[in-house]
Image 1 (tube, chains in turn green, cyan):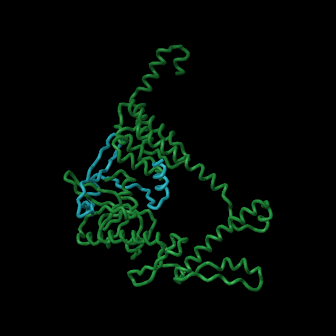
Image 2 (tube, one colour):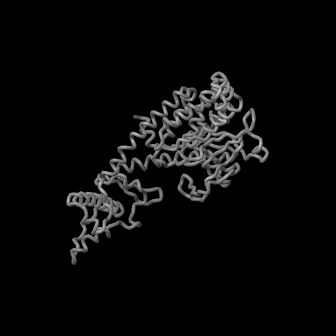
Image 3 (cartoon, helix red, strand yellow):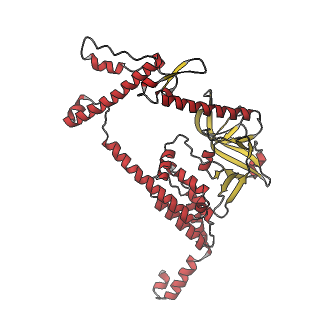
Length: 355
Length: 68
């Protein structure tokens, strides 16, 4: 503009600006920048404003439209969802994926997600306040203890008493369940009265005295109504009514799963089954493209096995009538020894696929 | 039917469907190990994301938030 300043030639200046900003190179630059924004912008969590994230995408899509490269509404939504890595919003993202209304309208999808993000943010704030106000019962040095006011000391004592009481109830309950009779009253401590406080910490139940299944400790108050149930192994277990119902439900589920496995084993071909009980996708065929370096112990439904496998991206081929697709499954396991490959539909909902 | 939303590039997006078969109540589809040539030439579809924490409490919180 400097060269037009001395001549005071406004028209020439305007024409130069117009040529510059509507020129091919400038447009190409804008398109490149907008595409980079769309691909690389991420919304990672509640600390950033979702509105800002939404505005960035809206501006990028407007830039692309101005450069005569408009993006379809579904494309806009998919790229917008791709950038959201915040786990709290995954349920809402799944809703968008499965709704034609949201999937075909960027405005509706982004408004819906913004609403959920605001609600999640509001929910989080009071929780942190509650944590600050709760009584901190951690052990303190005598110096720290003396620094507290009388009121604070009383509150901590009360909280500790409550915690200690709960522990005692559960310990007694466990003890009674193992022995199958009511516990005897603890004998009063003899000798040095200072030992009384130490004996509290000795009261922790030993590991071998724990009941076999955790479900037995679901309810600890209705002790009179407990029933003894004979396990399949012939061992006696004590269940509260609630725990018994829970255990029965679990057994039914185990039976159903067992049937699935039995049905599957008769078809050990190369196929992958949908299984929402599987925590991760796991493949008997395919190629490992990369590993994250994390390893987990992989158990069967019966809880046996426990083979260590690394979390990997597994590629498998699927032949459709039109062509062959390579399906990439991130966060999966590869184990050529398993009979059936399993994919978890819930894990896929987090990606771009659903059934 | 398994629907895969294929974003591809910003200009090219669409949906691919994989028909599911079923034996009893078990749904499945056929897969196999890809060849090296297929890995170089075929279309890639990302089925899952790179982050997955199956026991995350975030699922429960998000579910509750959606119900409000």
